[in-house]
Length: 175
Ligand SMILES: Nc1c(NC[C@H](O)[C@H](O)[C@H](O)CO)[nH]c(=O)[nH]c1=O
Ligand SMILES: CC(=O)[C@@H](O)COP(=O)(O)O
Image (cartoon, rainbow, N blue to C red; front, side, top):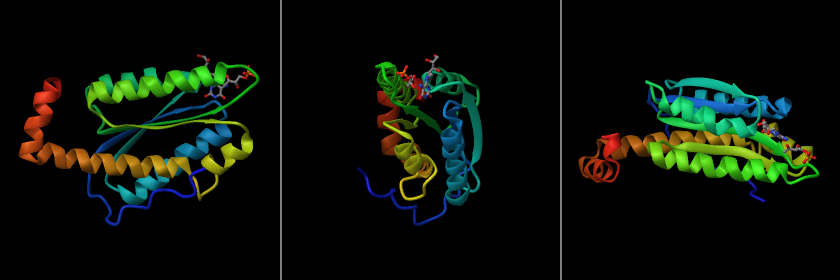
């Protein structure tokens, strides 16, 4: 089990990036906490960013909502996907988790936009508490830090002429 979060960035970002959080409502005690921790961390490390939140019924609806956000006129610089799947007595939880993971990664590559994946599959509420409400392993904070790191990276890639040429050659639709 991972024992700690990645560290906070040393410098506060001045980025005015747009960050979209797409979160499921299912298991809302835990998913609400993921959203609040992600927003709180973004406010601390990216205080000038614009953060929008979209809520969907369950984890399985997260990818299609991410697709809608990415297809919008004001495409975000990063999407944070938050959800909590608690494994039940059937394979449904695993099927949902697998489908969501694959869809999110495919979308990130297709849109050349970071999609931060914190749609969790856990065994029980104890694991859920540690990752959604607790502080040491909080996946909402982890998601915010990953989003900040990727926004900064992509900004450098975009403004570095050499990288820009490579990116445009590889993904001409994003030029
Ligand atoms: N059991 C959980 C679900 N199940 C619902 C699905 O995500 C989906 O909304 C339904 O299959 C209709 O398409 N969702 C969670 O987010 N977490 C669960 O533990
Ligand atoms: C992830 C789910 O949909 C799950 O909670 C459903 O429980 P079960 O597998 O016992 O039907």
